[in-house]
Amino acid sequence: GAGVSQSPSNKVTEKGKDVELRCDPISGHTALYWYRQRLGQGLEFLIYFQGNSAPDKSGLPSDRFSAERTGESVSTLTIQRTQQEDSAVYLCASSLVGGGGGYTFGSGTRLTVV
Amino acid sequence: DQQVKQNSPSLSVQEGRISILNCDYTNSMFDYFLWYKKYPAEGPTFLISISSIKDKNEDGRFTVFLNKSAKHLSLHIVPSQPGDSAVYFCAATYNNNDMRFGAGTRLTVKP
Image 1: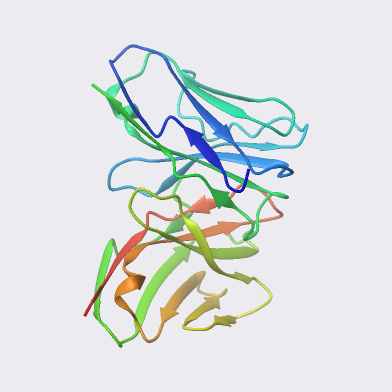
Image 2 (image 1 turned 60 degrees about the vertical axis):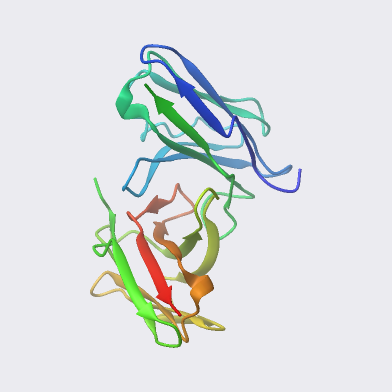
């Protein structure tokens, strides 16, 4: 597609439930990133996929968070047993290669855990 | 660890004046710095960048300055326009690794 597509755009879930967030990167972009922005805070790095290399998971806040990416296509971010502090906007970005100004962000998924 | 810091959460300037947004970083390995602009309900969009081998990069009304010895960069917008009102994020990366962002500064340009 023309841009990075994220779905759903909004998600309200009950505490303790699992959620799955989806990101469709720009076709041909080998690098894909997940960030989150909690209210009043900056963009927090979560995970980085680059081609077929092992992902950099150093930003995942707990083992309740996991992400997958099949090849150079869609990625899903899964949060298990959601907690209220997981409420945030989850942003996905893709780029041709890692780093640089070529990041294109999606519009994000606003997750609210009640 | 907060490797990129934007210590001013907000800034308000008059239309036509200069806006100066500041950013500090702690990791001396960073070799590429960027500014992103974010409107509500949208993802951040790339604005301007600078390599660590330069100290200034200009693009129209936007200029980014880098002071490596101080580990400080700034974004100047002149003249500021009401449409510039947004949240501005400073970001840094090294060796094409994942990007680290600051907390953002909300700029309000008053007509």
